[in-house]
Amino acid sequence: MEVTEVRISLRDDDKLCGFANIILDNTFVVRGLKIICGVDRYFVAMPSRRKRDGSFADIAHPITSEFRKKMEKAVIDAYWKEVEESRARELKTTDL
Image (cartoon, rainbow, N blue to C red):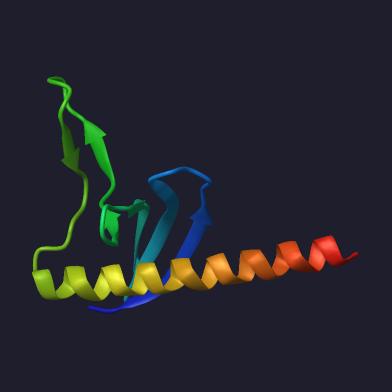
């Protein structure tokens, strides 16, 4: 399975850096992945919902650690690309 598309929505928050939607094999979409700035690295949190007891359960998640690494790399790479493009747009706007 391949991550064939990643879309990033940036956020201006201390820990929540943005959201990602991914498309797998051009056939299946997963929305609402969170890009989190952790203590020592950035990581991707799966979409989840609150259970009746107040805890959270993932709605979707990778089964293998190999695919989790592949998916996380695709999302984090797309995140940094979007950050760079956003900064370039801001610079272009301030130059006007």
